[in-house]
Image (cartoon, rainbow over all chains, first blue to last red; front, side, top):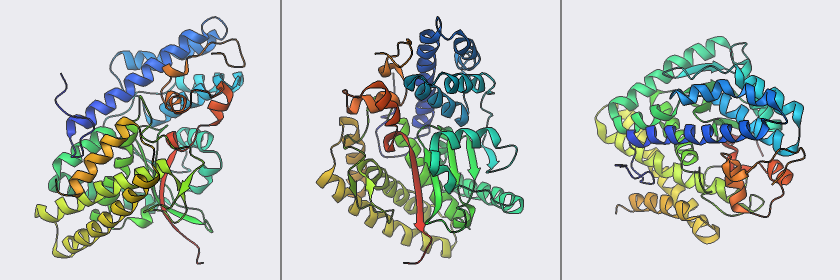
Length: 326
Length: 52
């Protein structure tokens, strides 16, 4: 019997683990369906899926690029693109089980080539917004990232545990010169466990903790979007976002609103934890004030224009209740 | 449901695609695949890099 409410607002290590299990169970069910559907006409695809399904059957985990390849395979099959489907299935057949801990990748490096390739396939033009960073910048940030994770572990263990249960891979990148949007962080439904960060926007351990609360808030919502969408509005409808200058679909507004509350929670809890310096504490309190403003702005837009599913309503209402101190 | 091949796929059994299908059950298979959008896409945070 489940002891944690998956839709609760407060972080939970157990919830993080359960969502990771649920996403892998959904992937396993999906691969099984694709495998059996291809058995007579495309047996090479069925054979290729034996390997990832064996990993999952043994309770192993699939890295983010494996999830991305599943989506590539599924989309190609739905579109009747057999060569693309075969290529994705073959790539899936050689995916290794997810490593324990967090694996660091540098965009554009030979080590990251498999992940980069799937990201480029799945994101299309959007992938051009992620360019490589230098090796020194990569090494420097890896150390800072660990400091930020450590800060979260000391100051907010439950949030740290929930994040670590979900996060498996970190890809470091930056926006190309002249880009109209200088990204600071990104996550993607089709790459479960992956976080993409731009090091230049996160210069302190507290800033790392803050962006982890933000981006893993998105991941948390992905894990809660297995059976039904949170938002039913069409993606073509655009609304002002509390976190982006450009108008966004309602799903993006919903996400931004929720993660604003998660950031406020993280910053306020860290501020009260006793692990921050005076300067850090002042920054955390100021950031939380802004996060709360962003929540109210986004929440008003969602209430006015949003058409939410039952799960979408409950998750956001739980966040609102925390913001309201209920 | 059928794709362009003779392979029968049930979108409701496919992680991610079922989310898109459940928000509009009238999607054709191909248009559903090409509809892979915001709900199962990237969440990108950032700031405008260029001055107005």
